[in-house]
Image (cartoon, rainbow, N blue to C red; front, side, top):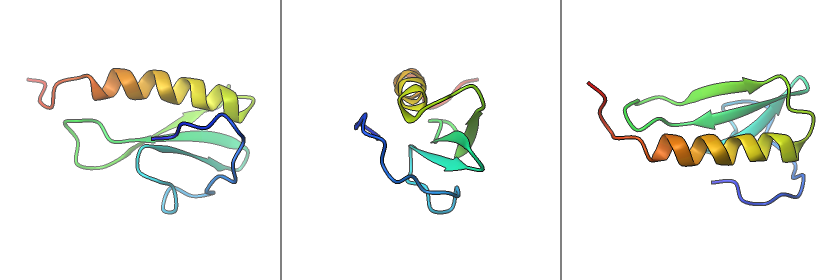
Length: 74
């Protein structure tokens, strides 16, 4: 999981992005998350994120909420 608030060199494609991480493509930040009940990653575009810090805050909030969900939702 991403922890640093320093603006790192981010991957520029989902193929090179880390599992449960952030990548930036064409000026847009994306969150790459694996939901507990899914087998593939979900990429969420953050068109309103102006900085890496904005993207990181959103990522941390969603990550903690998603990872606390049950593995199966009927």
